Length: 153
Image (cartoon, rainbow, N blue to C red):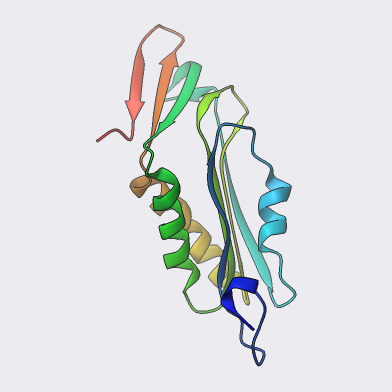
C-alpha cells in the first residue's frame, strides 16, 4: 500500500503528517487527536497552547498572531521531518492567527507513536521547533497600554 493512503505494508507503519495548517478559525483538540489515531499507536502525546491573561507579570489586554505566507509550508516541512523518526506513526499541528481572546487555543500539536516515550519526545520537539522556525509573530497589548512583538525577525 502507499504512503499517500496512510496504510501499512507488511505490518510496517508508514509515518504520515495528517494535518499541518495555519487557521484564522478556532482550533479543535478533538480534530487534532482524531487525525493522529492509529490502531498501532501505543501513545498519543499532545500539546495545547492557550492564550493566558498574564505574561511577564503584566495583564494581557489583546493578542494577535500574524503569519508570513510561507508559514503553512514551513509548518508542514517541520512536521514531515519529525514524522520520519523511529516509531512515529502520525503527526498533526495547527496554529491560529488573527485576533485571539484570553483562553483561546493558539496552537495544538499531537504525535502518535508505537511507544509513549517517542510520542512525548517528538511532541515536545515539534512544539519547540514550531515556536522557533515557523514565521508566526505575536503582538500583545498589555493592560498598562504597553505592547510587545514576540518572534519577529
